[in-house]
Amino acid sequence: LHGSEILDETVEALGAHHRPILCPKLARLDFRWCGHLSGTALVRLVESRAGSSNDDQVSHITELRVINCSFVKEKDILAVAERCTCCLRIRDEDDFCRTFSA
Image (cartoon, rainbow, N blue to C red; front, side, top):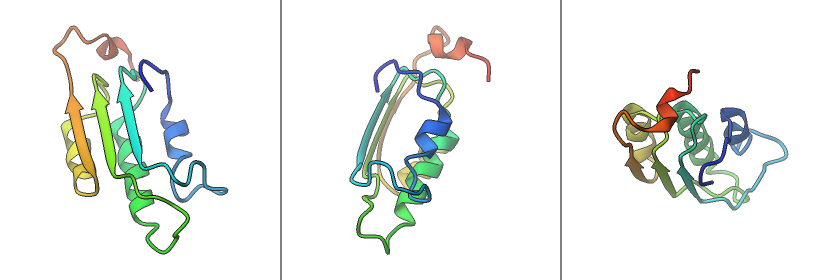
């Protein structure tokens, strides 16, 4: 989802709690330069999919790549890293995502 304007609500709709379950086989996500996305939404998504162990129809998120998304913080990645493989990269203050105000 390179440079997309994906919102938290869209990411949260991919969670296992949503009915009908959207993209049930989704296991890997790659976000790059997503300036509106928060780490909280990613944590909720990964946790909801991990909590669906009784549902064979829903894949767990196994890999999450977040590059230059300013509203995804270290604490979010640490929470997600307990459940899947994570890659995080954030540039310095010149990251244009930082200019977005929530």
